Amino acid sequence: MTRFVGCIDLHNGQVKQIVGGTLKEDQKDDLKTNFVSQHSSSYYAKLYRENEVSGCHVIKLGPNNDEAARLALASVPGFLQVGGGINYDNCQEWLEIASKVIVTSWLFSSNGEFQLPNLERISRRCGKDRLVVDLSCRKVENGTSDRWVVAMNKWQKLTDLELNRDTFSRLSEYADEFLIHAADVEGLCRGVDEALVAKLYEWTEHLPHLKIVYAGGAKSIQDLALVDELSHGKVDLTYGSSLDIFGGNLVAFEDCCEWNHRNRIQ
Image (cartoon, rainbow, N blue to C red; front, side):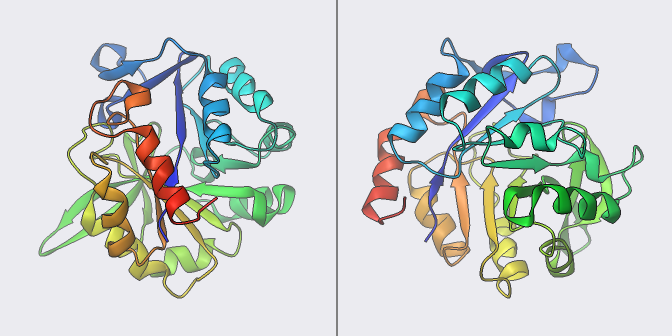
C-alpha cells in the first residue's frame, strides 16, 4: 500500500520548497522558491514523528545546511534519513543520529559516469539496510518512448545511468531503498509523473522487498490513491509545495496522516 512520507528540504540553513529545475550550482539569481519556513528544521522532524509518519528524510540542498540537518536529526534520533553531500568518509558520522543515509553525487564521477565501486564501498561501510540511493532523474525524449536518466549536481547534469529494470536489479544488491525525485516536475504542483510512477513498478516488481519513494509534482490528496494504483502499492509518495505545512493550499497534512492511519500504515 502506498503511504505518505515526509520530507524536509534545506537550503542555506532554512526549510524551503524550491522548484527543482531552477536549483543551480552557481546561478543563484535563477532560483525559484515556493516557500521559506519560519519554523526550524526540528519543528518538522517532531511533527512527523508525533504523527507517526515514518521513513521521512531531510535533504541538504547545497552548502550551509549541516547545522540545520543536525538539529532536525538530533531532535528525533534514529527517525529521519539524511541526504546531501553524503560520502564514504562522513556516512558513519551521520548514521549516529540518522536512520539511513541517502547517497547521490558521490556515486558518480565529475563528468557523470556511474562508479559502482563507490556504491560497493559505502554499502559495506553503512550496511545495505541503512543506505538509500537517490536516483533522481530527468525525462529524455527518445522517439516514440521516453527514457529517464539520473541527474546529479542539483539535478542539472545528466549522468550515464538510465533508470530501467537492470539498473534496479544491480543496485538493489547494495541498498534496499531508492529515492526518486522527478526533477522536471518537482515544485510545480502540476501532478505526478504518472508514466514514471508506473515504470517504477514495472522495473522493480521482481524485487518485492525493495522500497521506492517518489517525489515531484503531487498536488492532491487523491495522488496517494493514484500512485497506489499505478504502482500496485509499491511506491510511496512525498508532498512538497502543495502541502499546507509548507505554505501550500492544495493538500492538508492532516489528510495525508489520515491516509496512513486509515490504511494502518505506521
